[in-house]
Length: 120
Image (cartoon, rainbow, N blue to C red):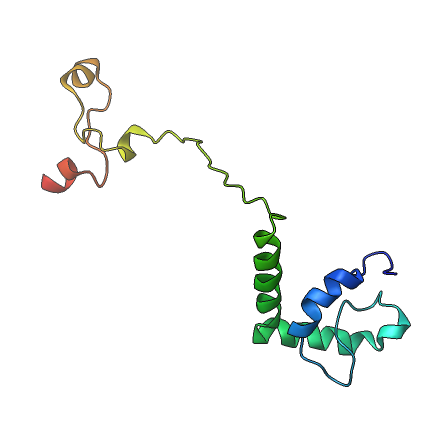
């Protein structure tokens, strides 16, 4: 029987063939591992090595493929429909002040970096 946080026999049998063997022992988590798994450093080294050589990617693909084939995975798509308003100067608004703005005395100078300022 699997302890808390350990794989079940069924789950282990699905991924065990994908893991490289080393001295008959296979890796896992460290520091909190039961002593029966051996030195935690060895397990940590294997985890890093297997992550680097693509072993865990192969395990994930195999498990997902098998689970998806029997309908155990529900694939959901989430679409974010949020919007953000842009400031008028960032949205293609005119570069020169309108005649109404000029009459009121606001925005009488073209913005720095605007086409009007560069042209003049």
